[in-house]
Length: 329
Image (cartoon, rainbow, N blue to C red):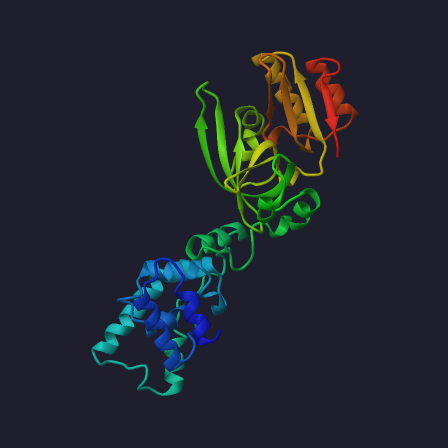
């Protein structure tokens, strides 16, 4: 990385002051690239580059070129800072000067790094990407939707960036990451939500009214779920919104959906149904369609099933003949 690009990237990381960055850039320009975390801590002015700033640099990926994982670097940061502080105190006291000793001796000092924990697993990719977004405002090493790109392309009709140019009232399907959600309660006491959906091109607000929210609540669980959202396009003041009709996890796209007609909200009946669903466990989502009170709910993945004749017979033995409907793919 050339010095100009190096400086630009580092200056955009949260929690890292301009004085610390200038110090790093000047040191790197004068004495060459940093060879590792220990080398950086020994050469930098740690009065300006504190622990929080170093943590942010590591999490943002600024030290990925050191040949260690971010989790390994964070694991040894405290001990590395202790060693570098001791080395700097010795230099101040005149006991050793890194630039006054022979190259072979200098190499030995540089190699005196805290050993990296070999059994330290790297953070999950989603966590690494979230760190980058939090500290830089952008994803750098990838995108959370990367692994779903093909599924999204095959199953969507629009992208966030295109919505402002489309006809209002049209039905659209988008795929993206639920980056923010605000839940409220209506005057009638029913829950609904406003969701910010982010795809590869931008963001759009999704309005989830109570009826849709009730049957999609499980799909909204978890940390930043990836969803397929179908609904009507609304344009007000050139600001697109999607009035959601259906939200499903991208991981269920292309699978059969199983709808179960539940005649009544009876605890004993539901216990029998739950046990039966667990015996038929599979990858197809199960929706409970209650007759009284009338509502539809998506079950937790623990109760999803593998469609088949045996599954139908087992569930109809609990709910009655004709209670099972299988849709798609």
